Length: 186
Image (cartoon, rainbow, N blue to C red; front, side, top):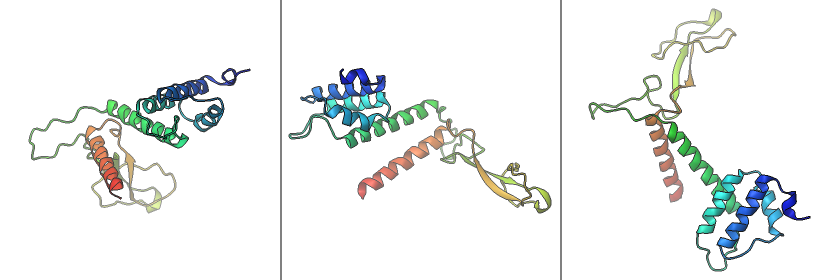
């Protein structure tokens, strides 16, 4: 009985991608390596592993480098591809940027959260019971949902625009780019 008879469909897809990558890199992927790599990669999405293997297969192999990259390198490439896919999917949901009538004035996409990067919208609650009162704050009044007696307070909740606001998405992208630049400098 061959090893391929015992594999699930996703394991077979991963094994096939690893074998194709090894051939593309000028070598082979033997039956001793297959179970080790499968155990280490089976928890990942098979399609992403196949894409990572395809990308590795297109890269030139350095002299004395192994035919099949280390499991950690493959897992790292899969994580990178997953992040790129998530960013692309989030970008597809974004609405168009608001038009600027006067370039000197800031343009806001959402007047509830004022384009806060993570969509947090400040609110205030008057409280419930004998401890309730008025809080001097400019946030909109909205009960927080706690049923026990409590005093007036402010709180935040995520705005409805969070997944579609292009201004806050651009701000998050710029913050990520700055974080990556800081990490590279270290």
